[in-house]
Length: 207
Image 1 (tube, one colour):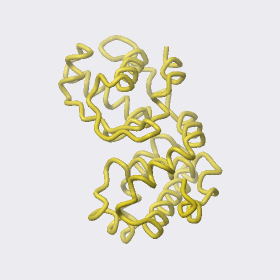
Image 2 (cartoon, rainbow, N blue to C red):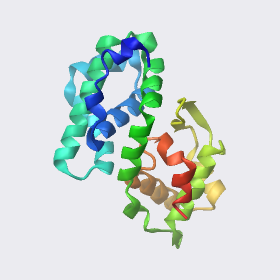
Image 3 (cartoon, rainbow, N blue to C red):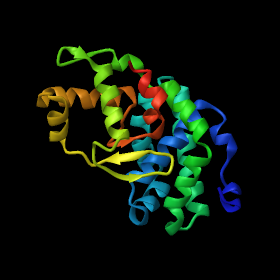
């Protein structure tokens, strides 16, 4: 991280799991799902817009209302600080640097809040966990088509719906249910797969 970034990034934003998750989910959304030149001015000006993007995905990881509110607020603070202290051409590089520099904290917070209970269901009469393990291994090995990949390893999938049917022999209904489980568990939100769930130790823990 550059000295300039250190001057505005608040270490207190990541000293608790809820706040760290707020920053991390905001960072991932900004990396993969925001058009910087057109979206960020609205997101900064209309706080409800950023909250509406953050809250549904943070709610998958945080189930305490006070923690959820703190996470959303911290994510919005991070966004405003980024925009106030970083020029538009630098957004991608700075976001990448923040994820890399604080990856250990983001990883620990994220993996502590993955919803393993959401994985304890059946897909096509089989346990979902082995499907999820295979899916994450396939993402990590580039079997699925990925778009931008951050230095830490987070990525956005460009995989057509039909690939899930072809790769895993699932019906269309089963694929829809599988994608729902990936979302409910926090493994994938929108089409973003965060680097922590692609860590080999985490993937092996799904056995």
